[in-house]
Amino acid sequence: MNTVIGPDMPEGEFYIEHDRIMLHMRLEYPEGFSPDKEGAGCPLVIVQHGFTGFMDEPHIIGFARAIREAGCATLMTELYGHGKSGGFFRDHTILKWMSEMMTIIDYAKSLPFVSSLHLCGHSQGGLLAILAGAMKRDVIESIIAVSPAVTIPEDARSGCTLGCPYDPNHVPDTLVMDDGNLLLGGNYIRAAQTIRVEPMIDAYEGEVLIVHGSEDETIPLQASVEAAARYKNARLEVIEGDDHCFDYHLDQAMDAIRDFMLSRRDTSSCPHT
Image 1 (cartoon, rainbow, N blue to C red):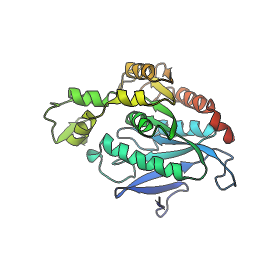
Image 2: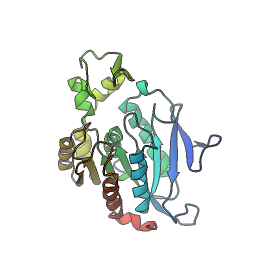
Image 3: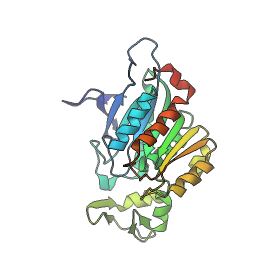
Image 4: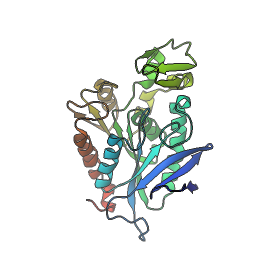
């Protein structure tokens, strides 16, 4: 798959194409690792932001740094309608993100240095990691779901998304959210209504880490408690007193992620810092 490097793009940043949409990427390696060295091998973790997010949010940067400190490379992504990627926010759906993630995983798999593939996502990106991990369960060796928004599909079926009520059987063309500052297309709701999270959790047998703040104001902690209990091989790390984006104890969330990746046997192929 071809990559496109635009003028004045920082080192490690590029675009890949999916259905005529350009997706912004950033590939970074752990300290001391060179992909050009003969025989070099390294685990790669694909890192996804959440709803309205982008790769340079402090918590996303922190998660990626913790992963690299565990001796793994990171591929940070921006998906349809977010960050520097193509598309308009109001037109994005989780199904579009799922399709894009298949392309991103296939691209990552093609990189010659990659010894194993893993997913890390926050909020809606955490839900995406759960869904994509199940869809590509023969390829994805572990999942890190941080504040995963596993409630999105059921909320859509119930008729309330992020505090915005609507008739789930007569979805409006546009949802006006955040006091009028955010417009979301009705197709986002229609697509979300089709998703069933539980069968996707049941389908995945690899290792899973779920990290969630005890005071999350967006996604209730109980949703992660139930998801962790349903998985065959999951660990739940609760960050006491923290919110959805870990504004108070980001270091603790990073510690949990770093420790999880260090515990995986295949990280021994990379230098640890």
